[in-house]
Image 1 (cartoon, rainbow, N blue to C red):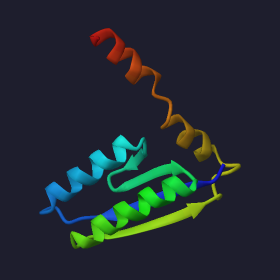
Image 2 (cartoon, helix red, strand yellow):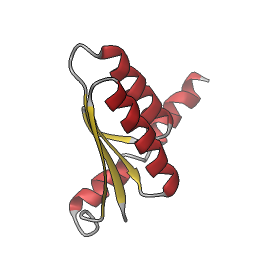
Image 3 (cartoon, one colour):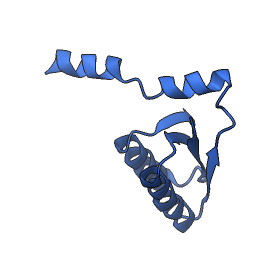
Image 4 (spheres, one colour):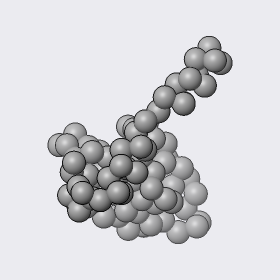
Length: 98
């Protein structure tokens, strides 16, 4: 599987742009590898989302990089990435609350 990575850096004084970025990426279903590093399966739509958010970050004075990679195809990391998109537990919790 091919993946897209968005790697961002915003200073600690930029809490509002960081929160907007996090919300936008969570809304589109991006997996979070660690603070400032997001992953999505490669597609034209996801490339556009990451490029748009990359511009938001750089406009706020931060840095951002969109990287396409097949490096993880045969790696155990590939399964870890796939696990980021398994949201059954989130939906079960939501169903209980509903």
